[in-house]
Amino acid sequence: MKSGLVIREPWIGKILAGEKTWEMRSTATTIRGEIALIRQGSGLVVGTAKLVGSLPALTRGNYMDFSSQHAIPSEMLEEVIRNRWIHPWVLADVRPLPIPVPYKHKSGAVLFVTLDASVLDAIRRQRGSSQTVAVIAAAPAPSTPPRPERENMPVRATNPSETLLPSDRSARRDDGAPVFVFRPEVAQAYGFPLPDGGFVVLKDSTAMRQGSPNEKRNRPLREELVRSGVLTPDLNKRLYRFSADHEFSSPSSAAGVVKDGNASGRQLWKDSKTGISLKALLDGARS
Image 1: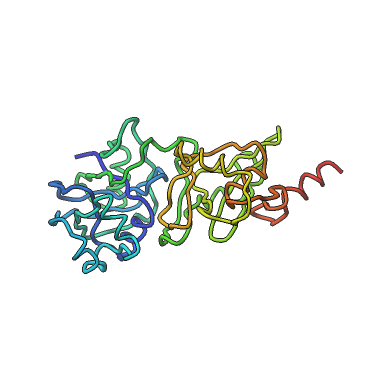
Image 2: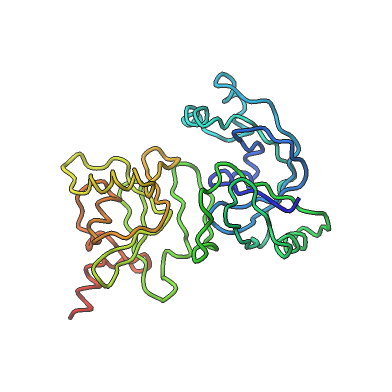
């Protein structure tokens, strides 16, 4: 089989680090053999493994008895039961690739992702194997294919309390302009200003689910972003995550949504490389 699967963080990182040998899924599988491991949202094959078994479904009563295999913390038990991530897919012989291999996510692919022959050849060369590599697409898979212009962004392995952000875009954009960062409490958001005064917050930035109890001018906007799926619940229960780049009317509007509170965006957004505020940079440009 020349198709295969995407596993999201932090689980792909734990698998590659040898901390997780069961990939928990919503259904059993009859697939066996060598598979490739794809980090969701990165456009990269990052390792290979052997899928050696599919075990009977776990229950609420015995789920945490196997925490050393599935690496899911107890505070996520209700979430995994609700989503029926109860079927263990057993992995063995996990091998990270020294150099991740880019692949193109085919339009319409939800569960299985078909890989081009060139991608399979690149994996074989690194593995030193002539065997056919099968790749399975892991649930929950992305609802839409990765956007091509952001497809090759690496993300680092983290635990559920950390944020996942494209570190290679946290300093400068492709045109050399700075990317700005705002870190209220445990949230971390990246973005950049627009010539018309707007501000774009980048995909995979995180926002506080509940910030200051004071009156919030941006509450209706936040509620609309949640309803529309731009803000989605993160593994960290204190956070939302941006599912796509989103343009705001101003830096303050963007910062207010990220903070869940009123915010002076021009002072709070800082150049991610120099630490200089957006206000200081704008004021300097005008002088």
